[in-house]
Length: 141
Length: 141
DNA sequence: TGTACGGTCTGTAGCTGCTACAGGATCAAG
DNA sequence: CTTGATCCTGTAGCAGCTACAGACCGTACA
Image (cartoon, rainbow over all chains, first blue to last red; front, side, top):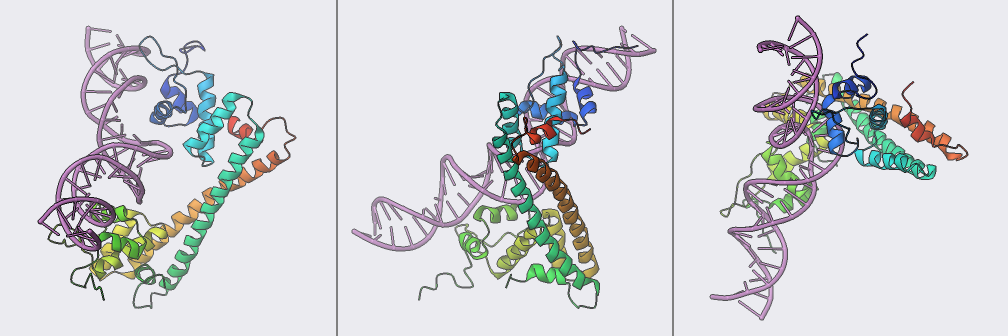
């Protein structure tokens, strides 16, 4: 069997990308901004990733999926690295982010209500002018 | 009475900003990207805005508040300018945008659920490790 | 008339979180 | 040994602004 890359040699960037589902270029981006550690290089200068990098990238991607900003992720990773992460500190960040998410949901729900209401008036198509354009054109009373 | 700016002379940029609540620099930005028309200039090259610009900027700001993208606003403004805007076309854009808003709400609600659930486990603080960090560290099963 | 202070002008760089090239080096298969 | 895929770096672009530098301008006060 073709055992190209042993544990010692490590994964190529494209392999890490496939494995994690992360975009190829995004990996390099995470390295340049310091979220991902710079991996060791092959003699020719090619990146060789290990299990550490797979885990780290997974962490970052899950955090991104939960909407954490890069700055927040940096903070989370720092706590992980320190090892002695106080759960309270992590929880605080989590609560803070949760509040932001809820605020965003409320904003969008307001938008949704206005849009839905306005468009509902539209659908009769009996009205002479377009209600949506009227809402946008009118000063907010 | 100090009638500085008559209808003929027009508003300064800072006045338009104050009047509409729009950021000063943003007005120039909207001009460079073609959302706002270039205003006439005073002999010294200073912008002089009229009622047209006040209305236009209001339209843009209300559309932005409803979450329309610049491209969409460009489309809406084009319809307004054509005058012969088919309400059906506007409605279609509106519905499309509404769908996008609802999708975003759903995404955020999923995030909210995961975060809230995880953090709830946190608050006991009896657990040895932080549940949020565990969720982020664990592969998605 | 001078001068001080603020407003306005332009161009350009920065922000977030990526994505997409160009142009060169390198690797792996045939 | 050649070909094609992959890798490398640096750089520019996207949305939607925001902020600064450095040069003008315009007005109030003395």
